[in-house]
Image 1 (tube, each protein chain N blue to C red):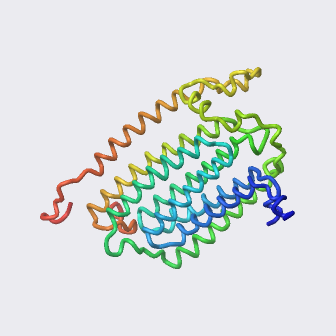
Image 2 (image 1 turned 90 degrees about the horizontal axis):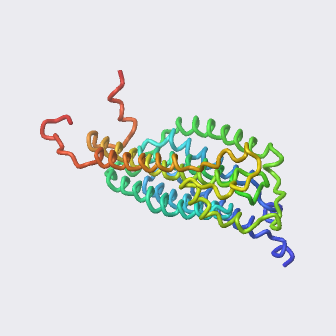
Image 3 (image 1 turned 45 degrees about the horizontal axis):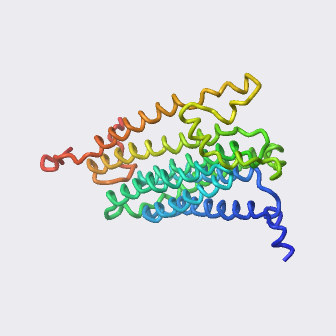
Length: 203
Length: 112
């Protein structure tokens, strides 16, 4: 009973989502069936949105679910369905590739984790609930305003050097919008149904 | 393990999860023979980076955080990942149409 009272529920749900995310990410890696990989990836990216929401980024978490899980992964699953034929569903990685990949990946993981835990201010959490205001968790309108060029979160900043980012992200937002339009038109053009020249042999 | 449950989480916890997603994504990109498996590796890498951006932008873990910039950059990464997936999938389908396979080891037409 004492143990349950001592549990930090924020940490508990973080650990829950983190374990599911990591487990299914490893599932994507170690499965050789492309259909299972797509399913595992859906779970891994879906629980990542839970991690975003636990960090106070509610809008990013919702967008992760809507754009990533609801859009990008559905596209990917369509790709799996359109290319699934005999032999394409199960493609095993060669054993030699596994050995090299696990050695290189394991050393990269060890490097990254040792870098992540080596800095004391990253490892400790001094923020108490009393330090937080309601604005810290309700950032959706600030994010929306920053995308159209108004930074409400730093508008009251006195220091001029800290106020440099005040112009917001309007230009980046417009560039990304046009980029998305161009890319989608280009993708539709690339993937259109072509007349196969199969009768003459090569395409 | 009990200590993990009772103490508050920090940026390092998020970075460890991000690092694991990044490394699994990189290994996926390097070892999968199915072109769509490589694409899934790219998605994992981008998500690992996104977790770091959001963790450094959160005010829950550090008093001096990136603030809103972390969340905004994470949003841009999500949108760019969607665009990247659309183009890569179109290329993969084109490759499948012309070669009747999705095995990237067979994509050696440009070999000298």
